[in-house]
Length: 122
Image 1 (cartoon, rainbow, N blue to C red):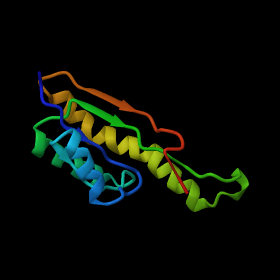
Image 2 (cartoon, rainbow, N blue to C red):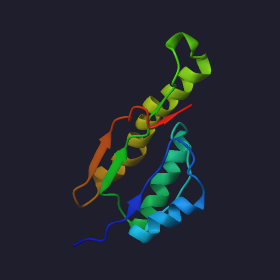
Image 3 (spheres, one colour):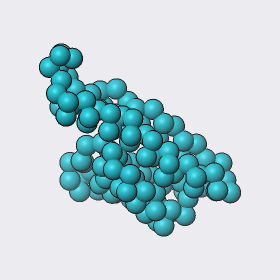
Image 4 (spheres, helix red, strand yellow):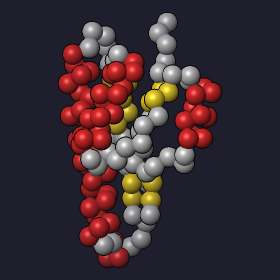
């Protein structure tokens, strides 16, 4: 049986180091990295750090998602940009950073890429 390494990246910042500590109690090999999935360099850096720490990624759930909770006519352009940057570009950046590495791996891997509705809201 292979060791399970848990990695989680969020569209919104975590609630401090306590979150990583709680995860480590369940899975000691946790890589806690705060990134902005809308920034390709952040996601690429996460991929590099993941492979440096664990040598591989076997399951990637690339599903950060946000929503603006108010009437559509009340959305600002900034609201729309935030949603698109996380829900669309975050997924694109995750696929571009991780999929080539997953395809080069010698073992089976799985990537899921779909934004989660209402995962985070403002």
